[in-house]
Length: 358
Image (cartoon, rainbow, N blue to C red; front, side, top):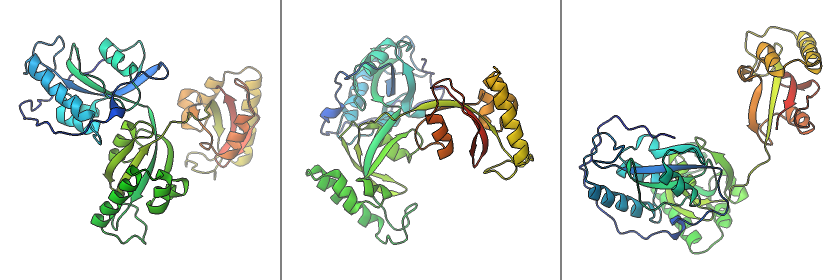
């Protein structure tokens, strides 16, 4: 892994004033329950003149950089802090909000960085450490997050129900009351059921597991920063005001499969270029299945014949879980052993031959 230096000038001389905030014990590193095979995180980089790989325009002395990094770390461990906002405030390379992506253990070129990430749980903030770039502070992130929330919407908020008439100020006040009930020890699910304007209130506010880019940025930043059981402050998004609780990620059942799809005119989302009839599609898929059973190369036949964009990858659909495919497709897949071919499967999208690969 290589962190590319930012090519824009940074305002390094802006004074930063420390704020006295209560530290959050949940953000202090503890040894992870299981040694990870891969890690993800976000980083604050405070470079200094003379560092081996100092970022462009690094002007601070080593002592000045250490003091700034210490201040950033203290702010990052404070209750209710948002690490991504602190990246923007403190880091000499805030591009991409400091996110590092997923790093396979053993493949990070900055050994202290890997050691910091592998030595703590999700949502925890490292000690300040020195490396070739300067002083770093990192937070370990997950590739996925799981959370519950209470949403208090207001009139005019995005997707607010027609029956919601409260003002933005009233919504924020109600969110504050929800937070107080939760911090006073009331069950989060009960508060969500009582007050939330999200359909998830029927599940006690449970949103399940989600990946990057699926939620509003402010919500996502907070959710990915929370340890299981940890409760946020009030978070504002275009949908209203949220109180978020981190939840344990439940690893879902996953499959992997490849397929060849043959459409006919009139199937769901069928492109205009497909003009064959249903009968012609049936004949074509039957012939392809015969070729596969006779030892034909699945990826080659998919690339040459499939009407799915996955043809570019030899029909590979990647990994997916229950509920992500239409029922006839999933039903056929579940009945297959790894490496086994299905018979012809019909869905609203056309005829498929499926090969289970995981």
